[in-house]
Length: 244
Image 1 (cartoon, rainbow, N blue to C red):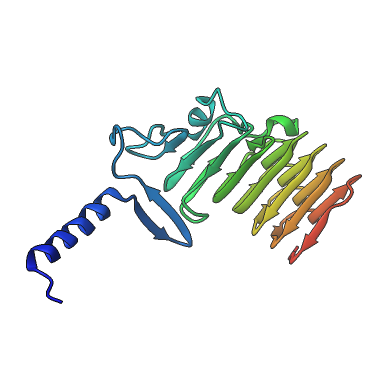
Image 2: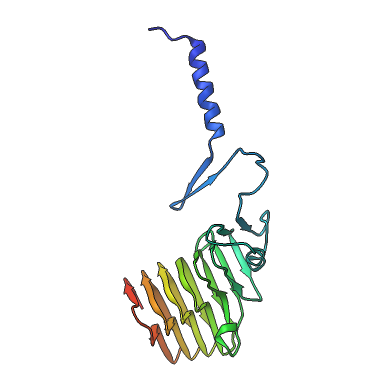
């Protein structure tokens, strides 16, 4: 059977068109990002994806980015993507239900600040929220007040944290992660660092239920009282592959 040159060219042309119409898929660091090349208006950003970057993002401030979201729900979730760089904040980033925050990597994206007072509720870089997720970044609090906290969860349920490094230091009560009256908080492949204070705690669980720690690495140094994990009146908590 003889296939004409014209037919071969037609098939190759069709393949080329299909390739151009298909989304661009980028593989990096075990993550897959699909970027649609065509649509009704290719100049428009993806719906419910908020970008934060030093340049060319929708926001340069992660706090402002999260605060801009007013309609997140179980049927209308959001994703906040933070690009490479160090983002210094002066007020706590308060997460919202059904809003996930993802950085560009633990050694690539850092949210930092000196937020420290006499109350744990006003001494954290990030406050968690129900049905939310935080991943792929570093959170650092170098505040020198009474409390210095990286992530603070009060009454939070069903939150997941993965591939995040939390650092807290310079306070009297230093807690990289603080869970209180919370349940079903999952920390996977998380590093907690606490230093330069009186009482240093990697993960603090108070009156909480079902806190799951997997692949936790706690680095605690320089305090009078040091705890990798400190449970107070908490139950059904599990630890697997924890170095604390």
